[in-house]
Image (cartoon, rainbow, N blue to C red):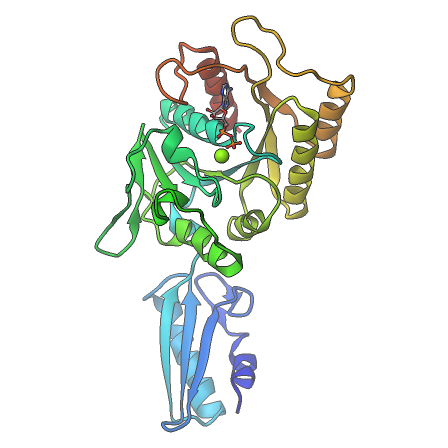
Length: 332
Ligand SMILES: Nc1ncnc2c1ncn2[C@@H]1O[C@H](COP(=O)(O)OP(=O)(O)O)[C@@H](O)[C@H]1O
Ligand SMILES: [Mg+2]
């Protein structure tokens, strides 16, 4: 008897707490055979631990392994399934802030949108998921070594300006480059959601992505299936081109695009445009809107923040615009 044969025998059992089969939820994490003792060892993800669904599954597994397959015994370890609902709260919405290029203002938009949402009495978490260029702790002027762990060994987010913040930089040595690849990168992103003790009643978790359409983006799409995307671009043909590509990558993974934010478009004081734009500017933006079936939500000026390093308050033009964006998003 091989583990593959055992898998085939048990994978169609149903987890009553989700009404899905173990195969559908990819719940069978490990199958082992102890040949000396003639027992089977299983690690199974289940949506709700300790309830009737677990008890029933345990009975059904024992029946198949012992009666049908003739093993002497079975040892099952149930683990709580990594379901996004378990992460922060049933109604938490995930907003992914992305762009094609670096330096267009993703992180700035992420924190300012978060900040504006807190002013609307929303509870907000921020994930700085830019693995190679983490910048949120700097922009929010957070102290270094902000990481703290609770008695369950879960990471406690850093609380600042009423937002809960987790950053890749919490996990790396100061001043050192990060060289995460592939699976390590994936588990890093997973950790943000499953190893972090977020408040259970967060209204939003805003995820600040790195530029482009690389591995991290695909991983995030895999982890957050119901996330909505906010695209950030400058009025620059290169940035817009890449934004279009990033937007399409999200559409290909069935993510909804909330809208586009055009950042650093004009001088706050003189209202002069800051980019020498080619004549096709409007055509390009229009075609992005059309192809991605979305719209430009706001156009922000280039503005030095008055009160903080990168957060704008409501007495500033940017602050007012962020308030409008937050309102728009909160009533969707
Ligand atoms: N509207 C703006 N006006 C002035 N400076 C801005 C504006 N938006 C972003 N910045 C600045 O531009 C730089 C890059 O922004 P950042 O948010 O880090 O971009 P990204 O996350 O896309 O790489 C930062 O120094 C930030 O403070
Ligand atoms: Mg950034």
